[in-house]
Length: 201
Ligand code: MN
Image (cartoon, rainbow, N blue to C red; front, side, top):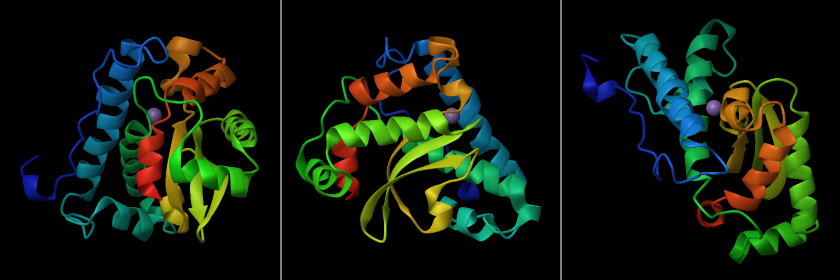
């Protein structure tokens, strides 16, 4: 890029390429981060060069383009850049399982308990037809589980994301083929970074 000051950067992964194995292979992580995530960031930078969006924070670009069909390419790449940066923060090696702290109490109180959370989060991911994301969000301060299609993001709808799982095939197909529910189970049992979720509350 010839104007570094307004370029969006690919944030560094918070773990090594092999660190999520065997839940997510180094091959999946490498392609997901270096090709898909990087592609969204690079495309966004190209698309917004010398436009009114250059220099704006990612979240602001997402909000400004969410309701503008003629800006779909900017929205899609900005939202995917945001979603992926968030996804990496939501996972860690040897994560997953039952949460502790405030999020544990709130899941018990607002979602009926951990078992119900697992069921609902898995269902949101498994039933998202085609590409998309499942989320745990705050909706006016209340925990809620939702799913979004393609690049769509809670940021565009005034919701506060706490946790996400990427259910685009590129996130799991090399490791799980068509078994998206198995990827979701492994994600919940072995990857969720509940410390990050607690920090978001
Ligand atoms: Mn992805």
